[in-house]
Length: 319
Ligand SMILES: NC(=O)c1ccc[n+]([C@@H]2O[C@H](COP(=O)([O-])OP(=O)(O)OC[C@H]3O[C@@H](n4cnc5c(N)ncnc54)[C@H](O)[C@@H]3O)[C@@H](O)[C@H]2O)c1
Image 1 (tube, rainbow, N blue to C red):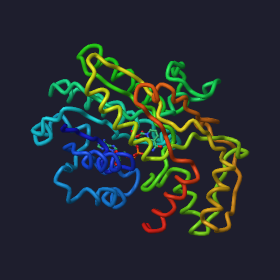
Image 2 (image 1 turned 60 degrees about the vertical axis):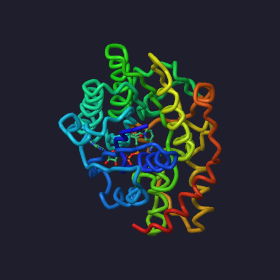
Image 3 (image 1 turned 90 degrees about the vertical axis):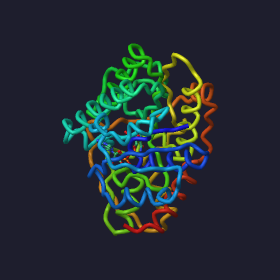
Image 4 (image 1 turned 135 degrees about the horizontal axis):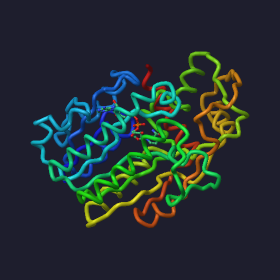
């Protein structure tokens, strides 16, 4: 199968491309090396793919997808759309940029698919759409119409956009709501990566709130297993639209996350406390029964093991 992966040089995208070519799919990856974090880091993410004949990389912005002739010539069968401006707190500082990439950009991806007759989509949504849902674990049928950050707003809007293209133009899609993904190559802005870097550099880490906020950390290979299963599902189905959580169903409090980092790094951790930040949610916790049922999804990696695997990668990849 020929698959276009947007955001291929990113954390999740680069892992996905590796797994896809390993199982024999032909992959065209695109990325514009958005400056949210360094180009060098993203180029390093692609190193394992550079000599693989099943992988082609094209530097392109999703906003320019429809006018890129060489991408059209690949005649892909399915798109996995992961390119986005990610991150909750930066979206509060620059909402316009999130609007442009995530909303206008996703519109361009959907229109590219419509114009090229590509009928199958897997979209990378986010647990952020749940905001401060009063009830946890979060189920896909809960109301997500009260986004508490511009990033969450764009992802919730994207899910409606994919529905619209499904309803009107027959583009089948699976929207996967990822819950905080951890593992090698994790984005440098995300807490675990950031904390290890600060601890290594002898800097204090900032704790927002009292340490009780919790995240349903999910190991990247578990997320990839869910994406691969979603690709296989949407490929087989006719007239299909679903939203599915990919999480771990095991929220870890911030205080425990820091304990694990302290144990693994064996370094002293200096902490600075700050009030909880607007836009951040108290807890994320995925109900994964739908993913288990539809995708056979079964996350296997305990949090501690995921952090340890990240740390081994981090030590062998100095900035
Ligand atoms: N990492 C997580 O914990 C997490 C959680 C929920 C959802 N997600 C979603 O999963 C997807 C991948 O996230 P990630 O953590 O790998 O982020 P990432 O930033 O590492 O990867 C995203 C990639 O998209 C590229 N990109 C950005 N704008 C683009 C544009 N206009 N055109 C082409 N490429 C562009 C970036 O250069 C980057 O390489 C994103 O859609 C993100 O919102 C991630």
